Length: 111
Length: 112
Image 1: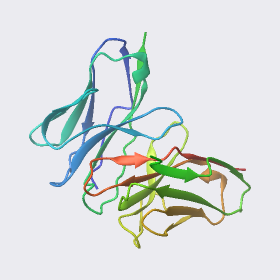
Image 2 (image 1 turned 90 degrees about the horizontal axis):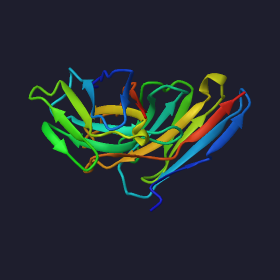
Image 3 (image 1 turned 180 degrees about the vertical axis):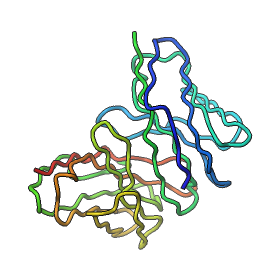
Image 4 (image 1 turned 45 degrees about the horizontal axis):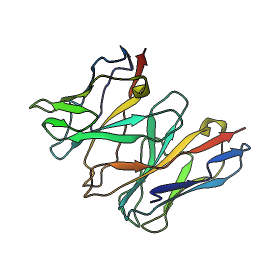
C-alpha cells in the first residue's frame, strides 16, 4: 500500500494560490494520484486525478514530478468556501487493492 | 441518480447491542468500501470488497463484519457495539474502469 504524508494544516488568505504537497515514496507503477475535498459532515468528493506531469481542470491543478514520489495540488485564488480537508489518495482503482486515505490537510481560508 | 445510499443516517446504540449499516449503490460498480471517521480525524478503511462475493480486511477491521450481498449492496455489522465505535461511517464504491470513488452521505453512530 502506498502510504501518503501531507501537512496537517495550512492557512491562507482569500485570493491567494494554495499549494498542498503530498509525499508517496512507495508509489507503484499502476497507482494513480487522486485528490479529494471534504467538508464537515459530508463524504469526500473528487477534485482531480493524475498519473504523471501536470493535470488541470476547472477547479485545480495537479503537478507530479517525473519520479512520482510526490504530488502538489494547486488551488488558484482560494475563497472562504475552499476551507475544507484535502486528502491525497494513491492507489489503483483498476485493481483489487484497498484504498487507504492519509490524515489529510486541513486548509483554513481567512478573509 | 441516487449514487451511494446509506441507512440509517443516525443511530444511538447501547454498549453490547448489535446493528447493521446498510449501503447500496446504483452505479454498477465492482468495488465497495466501508470507512470510519472519528471527530477531527481522517478516514480509516474498515473492510472492502473488490467484487461480488469477496471481502477483505482494511486498516481497522476488529469489531466489525461485512457482507457483500450482491453487486449493489455491502453491509457493515457491529456484533457487540462498544463506545470506541462511536464514529461516522462512510460507504463508498468505485468502478475499476473509472477514476474516482463515490461516497455516501455518512451514518452517524453513537454508542453509549
